[in-house]
Image (tube, rainbow, N blue to C red; front, side, top):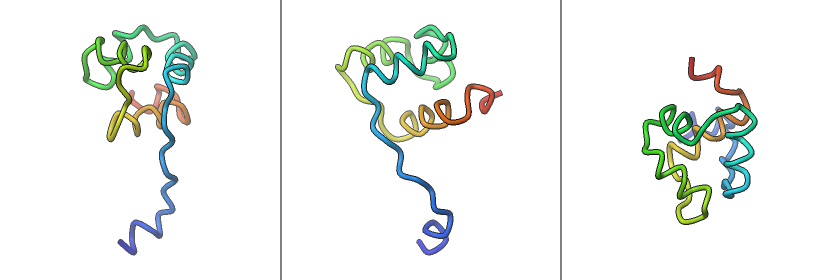
Length: 75
């Protein structure tokens, strides 16, 4: 735990449906393309954007990375 605290990893924010759409549009990604990057189904991205589900865990962290560093971080 001490090592993790030393890393000073910022807490990952919650992502609203509007924020997810903004990030996706910022990088000109379709729902299917974003789903492919995350290795999830396009219907999951659709549910996020409709507010029926919220991204959690690794998906939330991946949204944070895309928002801060762009999709280039995955290439």
